[in-house]
Image (cartoon, rainbow over all chains, first blue to last red; front, side):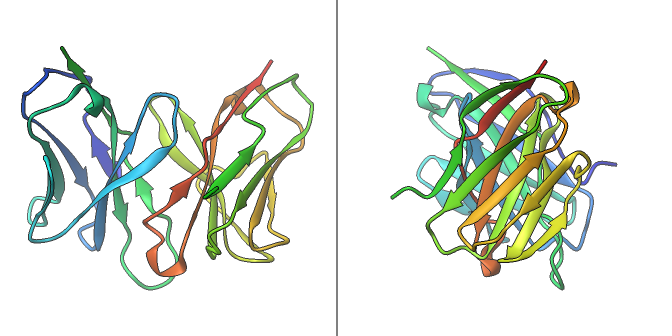
Length: 112
Length: 113
């Protein structure tokens, strides 16, 4: 099983729609989680952290389900500018350096 | 507000040629990383550095070497380029206490013919 798995998509949604992506992880001891956004032919950029209690940033909501070992990203009222690839990031357990694991990304295309 | 700067942005090499990719960051970050990104493979860590003068292998280090002589610079070398090294290369940096919050350069698109 891969350390981090994402549905590659693409998710094609109309403007104004609500869309959600999941990201599953295999290491139950993983400690912290993030979502990055990568626009076409650009570098990844941090979108938001994922807290145990869930967190919102405007139209974006991130949640963590430790029991089922996945994180989710919900986007409400999708805009054309939300079209991008969304990468989940899982941080290894504490204690020495271990590489941060990036998912392969889920592609979102918002259509007019 | 330069952040992480990579040079060059594009390069075409012939098989067997060598080159060096340069990464510079002005945020005083301790950690620096080199990734490659290929379709369907996501970001794969090539080498990383936890401080000046220190480097370590990542997930896919074969065919690459790195050096970090100064804290702000991290160089990635290809001694004898192969077509399998055609990829987009990203450099990133982070603080030691926030290694999962990484700042990326704009990338280098490398083609090896």
